[in-house]
Length: 143
Image (cartoon, rainbow, N blue to C red; front, side, top):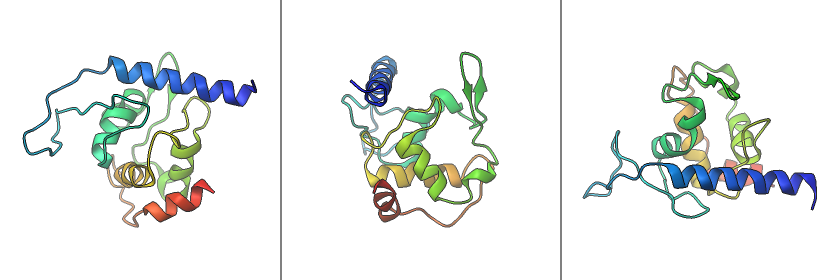
């Protein structure tokens, strides 16, 4: 098995274990996500659809709730007031393919999910990049 394939399998296992350890909260009666509630992805692919849900359930474990990142067992970069997010293609590429300690999420998120979480990051945490990434942009980046 190639080292690249082993790395992908390693990250899939880490993500699956991490998801299994997340606390599960009851969903709201109208199905809408509200802060403080959690949805839970029970399989390999994420079920969350909004950028906020995806950030809270997938990203904030490393990048922290305020997007400021962390240093400890690893170095997790800050997403707050991040000029690297200005070009929408850059965070799309990172979410799809990963980089350094960040696993690739291309197989775990749909084009709509990637666009949603990237747009959320680009409009929160002191970022104010209003040109939206589309599912088509993500689909094109997968090629």
